[in-house]
Image 1 (spheres, one colour):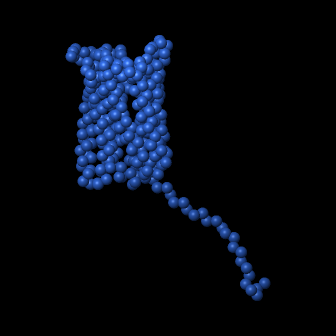
Image 2 (cartoon, rainbow, N blue to C red):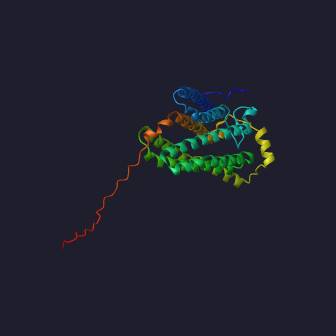
Image 3 (tube, rainbow, N blue to C red):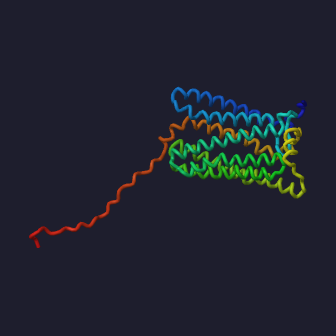
Length: 303
């Protein structure tokens, strides 16, 4: 395997080095979080409930680390290393499991916030997160099997819609908490707003433009059988910046900030028991005093 491309003059090599460093930091943070969870067991028996958040985070962090070490672009079938681990079949399978775990994290945390705040909006949106992302994953597999970017347009649109709803739920939860809890929820809502802007102005339009370009050129798409064979057996090794240029932005953000979000969601389990103390209690309704007319009858014998 040639490593001549690993040179400071090659932007792809610099980018890949960035992914490796970020992934190492993320894995270290995951291990640190695991230590914190283990330390919390002795103090709170309820710590058993929060283990799923850490497990889901571990799958997502490790899945993203794998994809950082062996980056690839699914529909184009491009990768950095000539190995079967770079195949779209392997990479997309890892991504599917990891992304469903990430969605499950959001569903668990948002539902817990909704319960504490007594918010039906938050709880209902939480219930819709995983089914919506399952549909997004189906669209993603349609794209990689057929090489039709329409699947990516639908996939990323569903992710965007999901986080618009999560942002709405968080925005409604902000005034129901105070102190650090309120700040954390507001910060999460702001981060989601930035994500939605990125998806709506850069990511989804990029895939839409590719889809339109393929339609204009009369591209032939793959069928189910041919597509499955293709994703399992064909990968194109390239270290040139041109085919990677449009992938670098979203991959860099995905394998850094998205993973940090997953770690933060896992950390929520460590402080969940503190939420009630930061809940803003609705003031008791004071009784309204209204004058009541009283009819007085004269006593017998009096005029």
